[in-house]
Length: 157
Image (tube, rainbow, N blue to C red; front, side, top):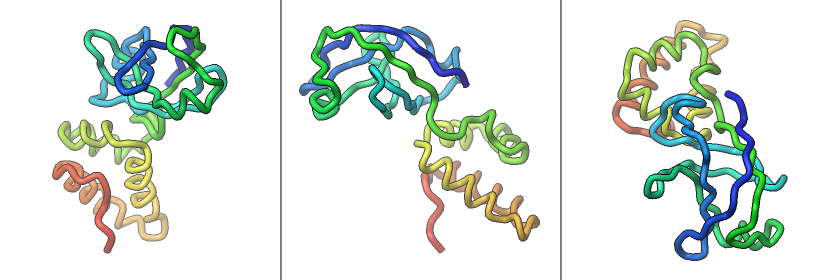
């Protein structure tokens, strides 16, 4: 997934926040998802955010603390943004995991909407079967069942 770089003006948002408009459709540029968790930089300062729709515009918000602590940005300032999808993406998945998700659209959509922390946790749990490869298929099946049930995180044993 290629990072996207652009320059834009910082726009006002509710309760002291700022809105960064994204001048491209992340569903087309990266892949269709219900939510796009991103990471990157604004004027060289690290950010993590979720692209959302505001009216007819896509973008992400920055909180007042980020604005205050990161170069004292103000509304209307021109900023240089570089963003990319955060965490493991569909192209990064093992074939068996990707096939299981492809076969279950509901689980797949839920997985794609999860923050990277939850996606990585499921994948680490599946990959932990190196010494017992026969468990891998069982864990993939269990992951699909949990995702279909809308469960972000595998319950602790």
